[in-house]
Picture (cartoon, rainbow, N blue to C red):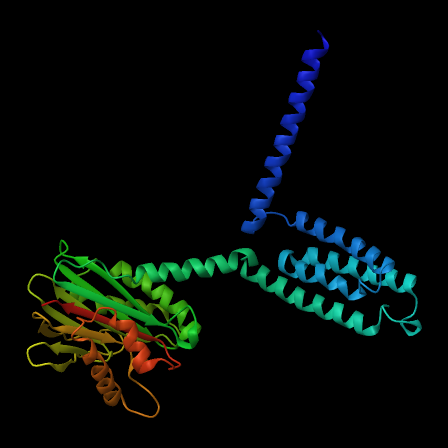
Length: 381
C-alpha cells in the first residue's frame, strides 16, 4: 500500500514537469513569433539539419548534392538574428570541409564539393545576412511583417468606408491604387455629424503615388479622421493644413475636398484645397455642372483661406468627387478627361448609379499608372 502514493506522487510530479515544459516552450514560441523572444529554438533546429544533410550527401551523393546546405542557410536568413546566423554559417562551412575531405577532390568525379558549390552557398549566406540585418534594423520579424501590412491595409479600408445613409440616399466609392498595389495615396474619411443629420466626407490625394505616398496617406487618414467631426466644417481644412505644415515633409503637399451635406434638405457646401472641381448631375436637365471651390494646396503655406461653394441635391441629382488620376493623362488635358468621365457616367443614370463607381474607373482609367478614387452621392428619386 505504501508504493501507491509514491507512484502517484511520482506520476503527478512528472505530469507537472511536462506541463511546465510545454508552457515554457509555448511561451518562448509565442515570444519568438512576436519578435520578442530568443531564436535559440530555430537555431538549434537548423544546426541539427546540417549534420543530417552532410551525412546524406556522403552516403548518397547522387541524390543529395553538397549544395543542399543552402536550405538551412536560406531558412536561417528568414528566421534568425544576425549573430545567430553567423554561427549557422560557421557550421555550414565546417560541413563543406567535411564533405570535401570525405568525397575527395572535385576533379576526380561528379557529386563533389566544387568551387561553384562554395560560391552558391556563400552567395545565399550573403543575401540571408542582408535580410536578417534589415529585419533587425526595422525591428519587425518576417513572420509579422506581412501581417502588419495586411492589418494596415484593412484599417485604411475600414476607415475609408462611408457611413450608412438614410432612406432616399445612395453612396458609391471605389479606390484603385497605382500599379495594382494594395496601398494608395488617395484616401477617404467620412462621418455623420450633427446628430446624424449631416454627412461630412473628405477625399484627399497625397503627393506621389502608390507605395511612395502610402505611408503619408496612412498617417494623414488617421489624423484627418480624428479632426473630422471634432471641428466646425469650416475649421477642418485650416486644421489639416496646419497639421501638414508641422510634419515638415520634403514632399508634403496634398489636395483635398471636403463635402458637408445636409441629409434632410440636400443642401451642401464644398470646400477645396487645390482639388479638382466636383461634378453635379441635375436630373431635371440631364446636364453636369462643375462645382469649383477656391483654396490652395494643403501643406504649402500657413494662414490659407478656403472659400466654399454651395449647392443642393434634388431628387435624382448626383454629386461626383474624384482625384486627378481618373481624368488626367499625358495625351489629354483635364477638361477632356472630365468630359469622358461624365459621358461614361450618363450610362448609369437609368440604373441610379448602382455599382457605378468601380465600373467608371474601369471604363475611363483602367490602365493608368496613378492612384484613382471616385465617390458618388446620389439622391434617389
